[in-house]
Length: 120
Image (tube, rainbow, N blue to C red; front, side, top):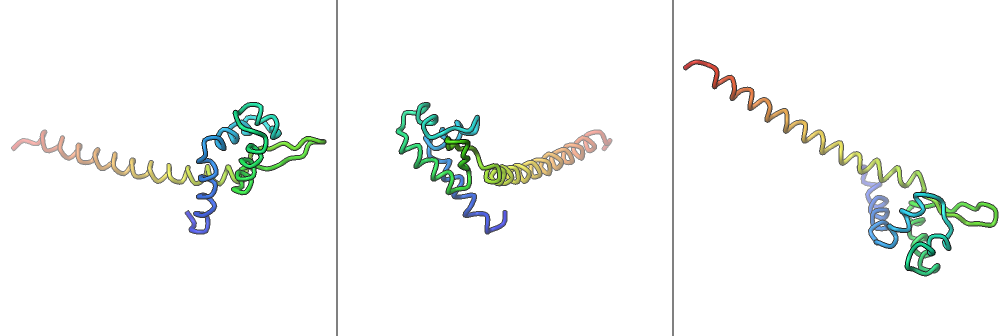
């Protein structure tokens, strides 16, 4: 990861670290929603939903979209893709390490099998 991206990723993960905020994000990930529509589905007030959406927007995870007279929130595809790429890069490193370890174990077993078969 580039050092310049660390604060951005940290802010995004922190924004999603709040349980209510994560629920808000999950709701708008299914379909663009207004503040009122989100509040109707959660046990929090409209002002609280607005604050959660502001934190998510400041972290680059949601965007406001005006459709006629309605203001709808939807995921910011660039912000979400950035987090996904970061997580994928961690997964790639983990898989590469697992592969190296599995190959090492396979080589060691193969050597052990040859020693058992060779007459003394």
